[in-house]
Length: 143
Image 1 (tube, rainbow, N blue to C red):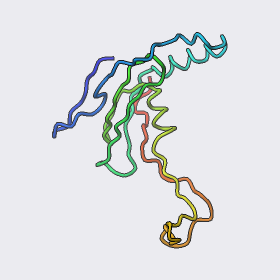
Image 2 (image 1 turned 30 degrees about the horizontal axis):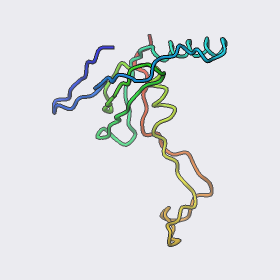
Image 3 (image 1 turned 90 degrees about the vertical axis):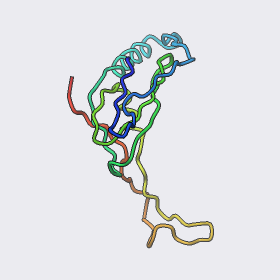
Image 4 (image 1 turned 90 degrees about the horizontal axis):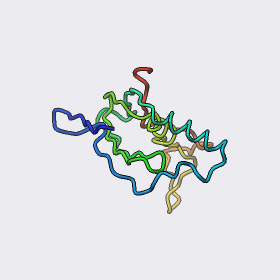
């Protein structure tokens, strides 16, 4: 993959900003059963597919996401820096990683400080609740 970083008017680089060599060699899934090997090869091919997305940050346009990405052993380590409202062409595995695992803040119930004072500014919640998702990559074009 060619390294083509974008720059803002102020000189901030964004997109794929760096690619590092991975010291872990690719093992060709040699220790897996044939069924699992076929499944992993299919998933690896799907994860490598390039998709066009827009980065959205629920906290505003001033926030950023800087993240390293390496889904499978032996692949290079990619460093991404994303700015809200910008469009990027990224591997589908990166989209899955950001949307499924990143950025959700939970609203916790019954939090108190060490001296016993309530930290929820009022009555505690009855139970833990799902919070906002901070980082999202949404599709712009389907290929």
